[in-house]
Amino acid sequence: KNYKQLVEFGADALVAGNAVFGAEKPLETIKEFKK
Image (tube, rainbow, N blue to C red; front, side, top):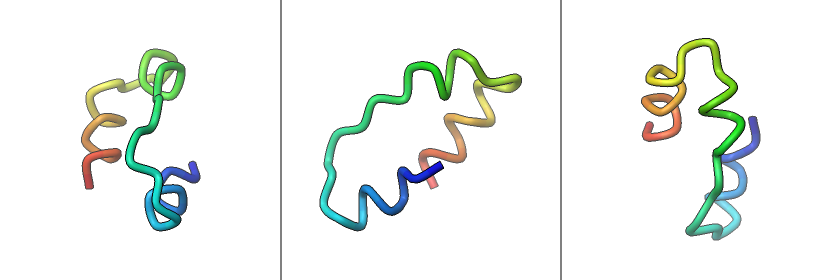
């Protein structure tokens, strides 16, 4: 939910384990992260 803000603040590595593997549509979640 807050990954875009984290990247804006300078984060260059994020862990998305449960956000992806627990998602109803994991592939769609990955696509959203890549935007």
